[in-house]
Length: 318
Image 1 (cartoon, rainbow, N blue to C red):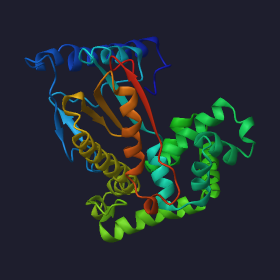
Image 2 (cartoon, helix red, strand yellow):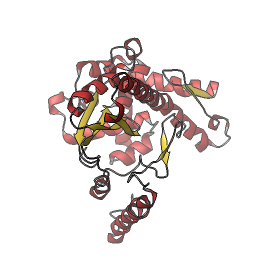
Image 3 (tube, one colour):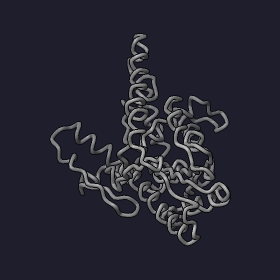
């Protein structure tokens, strides 16, 4: 990928690899796994990822690509039953909101409380301009670092993702943490505690242990540090969506919805339901309400949890 512009053949090799992946992993393999009812029945693994996220296999249904047009075309093949629609409900910027909740950073919390766009606001603060003067490029850079710091991204990785020189990346990095000092302190604290205790915990107290801190190899220890920074954030997000899934299921039982509404798929911060088209518009806001209420107010500390929804006849549409 880094050599893409060095020679014309490299782009062609990457195109070929994308086509080969789509063909072998999805187009050729998935029809073989369809059961007599015309559906795929993937196996969901409750703690498939170390952070507590679910995984799926036979087939792995959570990683069908969405960023490319060809990947999206594969999603068009997943259609709702007659008389039903697919409803996608997605937590909005949930990991950044959790970072604000866990760190208690007042500046980051204030951005979410005000309902303004977090990437624009961060760009305005880091580049020292008014929000209305933030350019697309400034917002893109802010988005890279917003998500990058949640994954323990260092200056070199930031340079690669932003483009430009290492010095520019370092200045950007320093400016970001000068803007959000409480967040910076929290991330340092997570690293130090993980090293001392050998584990991190989510907002709900679920632990992830790290053997890597004991390694004599520097790159293994560095990897453990990066994973430790992300674990409480991604782990809390995994807890929240699982609690939401349970509550929504209870709600469906209470409302005697039977076969009129069913959960089809969970993809990290998104839930996809198949709902009777007559009740989908009325039911989906009620599901959203459960999703945003699942984190108690005292835990959310004033940071609003938001969801978006879309409805369509196939997965590509939504």
